[in-house]
Structures are given as structure tokens and as C-alpha cells.
Length: 385
Image (cartoon, rainbow, N blue to C red; front, side, top):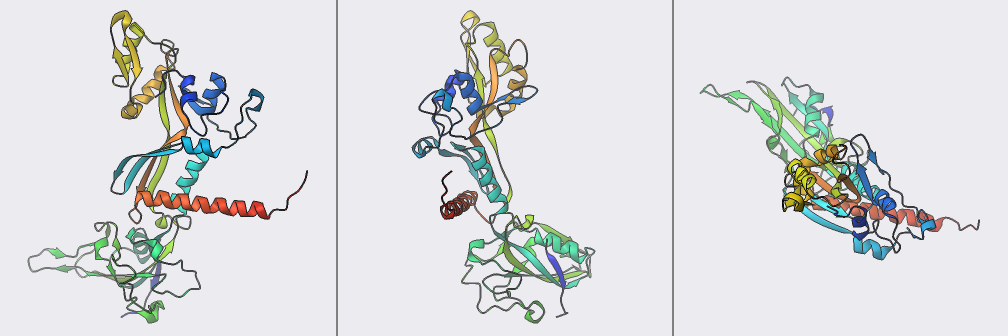
């Protein structure tokens, strides 16, 4: 939130066998595990009362007694890893990521939320506020307005640093409500579009200690503005006015949510509907009737059979699959699973970054963290045990 300062006035058809056929870093080894262990390793089985095999392990020797080497292999990783963008609309992106563990997926998500920088209003110097909104509440509302500006153009500002064109953006808000001769009111609502960028710096440097050595016009060629110009900040009545100056600095969501570049970002495991045995005749017709579209019926009578369609197009039927898998009649035939190393990732940017830029930046940050770990391990003295 902004800080107030008073300024002086101026799918898998064969169950477990399908898992072995799905080539990927966590779903293929030189030796094959028994079907039941392969399912436990690569799938979460969704039951009616509880889910099974929800944990993931990456110990290289875990399956050593069965002749399976589970150590990481870069070539296998390269063959199995893929990203497939399914939707990209404005500030929203949805993609499928295959071939990584949940630890990697969650790390990327957390980096995007709390370690990717943006610019946000930190200090509010209020010259005049005769509205009904208290100074502190007004500052809080201003601090949460997302700004359309590339944070990579600016430096972080430490507490002891003086405001400058390299670390601070200055915005001005000056609005007064008046009643027009027609009886209508002018400026009775204050919106985010009323914030004006001051590329030359503060208009009251003596009070703010903010002095720019040069204009920001060349540094930020596209200008600075709120991501959305229709965010309501305050309501005024005739005679009421708001005049203030906002100073924006660079920060990350770990410091305060106002610096988080995403409205939200999340992932879920790829669902999989599995036919546990050949399904023909009356049971096939019943299942197709229960799950229209998801299960596709061919033939009729004793020759009727079903195959699983595109699971992603029938998300609303997945919970019904879970329920049917718990019923005595259908439990031997159908099961809902989730693939442990395939994720449906969604990124909703707040506007300062494009969604694909956020993901790319998160990957770069993760790589830098790995480099630091490797440097530390190399510096650690070698010991013989």
C-alpha cells in the first residue's frame, strides 16, 4: 500500500501400459517397472473418498532392486520435455507443460508471483484532500493501481537512496469537483486515468527530495500510465478536491502484493480417463450415456464398444467419472487419473508484463538460483567418507 506523507501546501487406453508408452523424463526408463508400480510412480489415482499415489520421489536408487536406474538423464529429459500453448488472449495464457516434476512447476509459479519485479506507488504526498476518504485509505487504493511500464528500465531503490530518474516514477493527481450551470457535476468520480505522469520529476522537490538530473521521456518512450484507465479511486461532491503526488519504485511481490505482476497464476495436473478393461455391450452403452462426448460409442448391442475422447474438452464430466469409478457396477471398467509430470498452466498477468515474458523471466531466475547452488557445492571442501 502507498505510504501517506503530508506535504507543505503549494487420455490412456490400456491403463498402466499407456504410462510406459508416454516417453518423458519421469515416465520412461531403460527397464520397465511392473504395471502397478508404474501407475504409482507416474499417476495420481482419483478415488471417490481419497486420492492414491499423491507423492513423487526422485531418488536415483528407488527402483534399483528391480533393475531400474532412476537417476536424471539429460537426453531423456530433452526428449520428454515440451510446452504447448493452448490459449493466448491479451494478458491471459494457458499452456501444457510436460516432463517436469511438480517441484519445478511450483517453483516457477512462486517466482512469477513473488520474485518478478514491477513498478508500484510507494509514497503519496498529499497536498489537499477534502474528500470523505481518509489519507491512508486513499494511499492504499493508489498503491494497488497496476502501472503499464517495463520495470527492467529502472533500478531498485534502497531506503538510503535519493529519488532519481533511474529509480523513481512521479505521477500527479489533481481533481476538483464542480457543479456546472446545467446542474450536472463535473469530476464527481476520480479514475486511474486522472493520474498524470511527470517525466521531469517532482513539482515540489523541496518537500519530496526528488530531483531528476534528466527527463524520463527518452528512457520510457511509451510513457507511464495505469494498465486500466477506469479504476475508480474516489468519489467527490461539489467543492471537494484531491491534489497529490505519487512516487513509484521498483519492488517484488515478496515485499508487498501490490508489486506482484500477476492477478494469479496456477497449474493443475493433466487429467486422464482410463478404461481398465475392454468395455463392450450393455456396459459400454451405459457408460456412453453417462458420459456423452467424453466416451465415444461405436456399434450397438453386443458389438457396442467405447473409446475415450478428448479429456480436455470435457472437464465438466471429470467429477462424474470420479463418482462412477466408486460405484460397484462401473468401478471395474473406468478410472480417473492425473499425470504427475504434465501440467495445465495458467498465467493471468496484471498488465506490466506479457504472460510469456513472465514465464521466461521465471525460468531465468530459476537458472540463476541453480547456478548459485552449483557454485556453493564447488566451493564446499571435498571429503572422503
